[in-house]
Image (cartoon, rainbow, N blue to C red):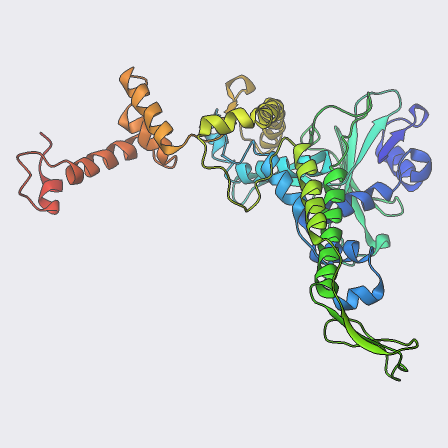
Length: 455
């Protein structure tokens, strides 16, 4: 596990962390997990070369020259379909001067939600850009959590910086604790950041938060397990798909063969366009018809994807015609488990948003900016339900208007969330002048109707 434990005898300091980092094998972690995280990320992103290599491992060199290896991206599609808490931007309330500094937060949180589903646990580094005045967040996909012997919770975090050369010896790591901030070389030497020679944490809190996917698999374990089952399902699907290509190539047509003759001197190949020589007494020429069952392989491919999706409360809809369209209410009944899972995610994200606000507040305070009180900050997520069909949505709007719960302005803002209330009112008035001319303006042109005073 990537967990560094500083013995109580050494004290919790940057020097003790550096010593334990240099002797990482005795500190309780190895870099093997980093390689595993990289592999999961390659599978999730669907890196083409990686998928091709993984598929090719299951076929001979000869087959690899005959058919293309399949590289379909099943992993990401399932993750992105399951983790949807931020697919509709969340609504946040709080100090306006703080909210204005979160322009990129919704896209960052959507990406973080997906990475959390893929990796199990992912870090989120918060930073403040003095030039733009914006708070930004960066995912930390691999890290080492730092413990002081006897403490149940991490006291620090170590993560790698971008390595231009790609050489392990050139890798630099960033270290944060509540009180210190510095860098380490691959060999464990302490390096100060250019703008922080005293190596002090200016925020008083670690600016890295951690998003976890569900409870730990082992009591007391900080990290959650990655979605290795989806990486495996993706690999199986691509292997089956490539095997289907092999069957199609060799068994989609008849194979011509000759017996009772000497083979030619050239290297032999098989295929619909090649004659297969089989020397034996009583020569003859014939065609061998295919005997494989590609339909069974297609069923296996579907089974792999459907089983993996089912583990994530998803139902696969294949391309063939269905029994007919269903209402949004019917779909909600069918996918109640998915809805429940997303609502559970949103509850966890509310807690995370509160913790992020406190970290943001500490960062802004270090720059002389106030973010407001955490009690005044709240986040509201869009309903996890499947969207209503348009007739159902219209009926809901009509009902809300009938009990004076909604107005035309509210409906306009629902349909176009970018509108302010004043913009929505203005748009409705303009559209009324166009769509519903009064008796006094019925004979006027559009420009004249728009200029006419409201009755």
